[in-house]
Image (cartoon, rainbow, N blue to C red; front, side):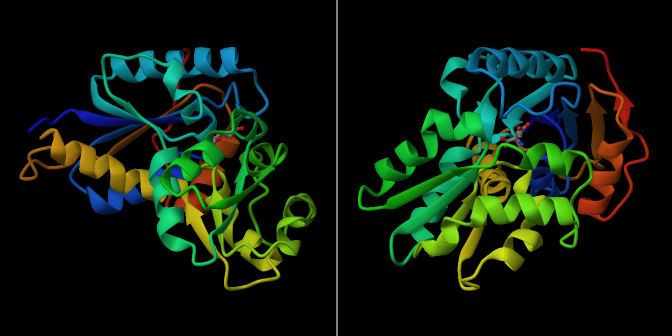
Length: 266
Ligand code: DGL
């Protein structure tokens, strides 16, 4: 048993897509969430800069005395092999790749992710190592996380739908039956993505959701679950940049207000 909190970080609001499921499946666990909003977007940064940001985030969460950290960010997860920490740090890529291999019937999968993640080739490598017959098409979406972070999350938002149409154009011509939303920001606009897909039978996979399930498994296997007779203090939210937009995007997505958001100097 370990009553310390779970730490989660992302460049901004994207990690909330994992947090939502973590709260659902481990309601007694306390959570410290950190959104590095002063440095968003990560997806257009170099590997060195992404790794440097990740280390800062890990240090911050360590100072909050967490027991395990979820890098709820595809871009950081794609560079996880360069990140060492004495506190376990889990990523989001393996769980959703496993799920994609179990989901696809025709073995054709598309991945939507940031430029840095696509450049790393990590989704292709991981999926192929699970099931070598998979055909994987990777689409980078350079503007998408920034748009979401600045509040363009409604399915009717013209800027959002224009950008999404561009990124989905090729996928709409392919015969894929499964799409991995490989950046944690993207499930925030899942409805807009669905609206623009020609084939309505395509399954969209949420990397944050699969990572939440894998995190639960890790916590129980290592016997570091909280004592669930304790009362949960729930979630503390920290961000590094003073942006009112985080709270707006978060409440739009989570369906409740984050009243006690704390700005922090890292
Ligand atoms: N949500 C992150 C990811 O999953 C980062 C997006 C960004 O900051 O570019 O890749």
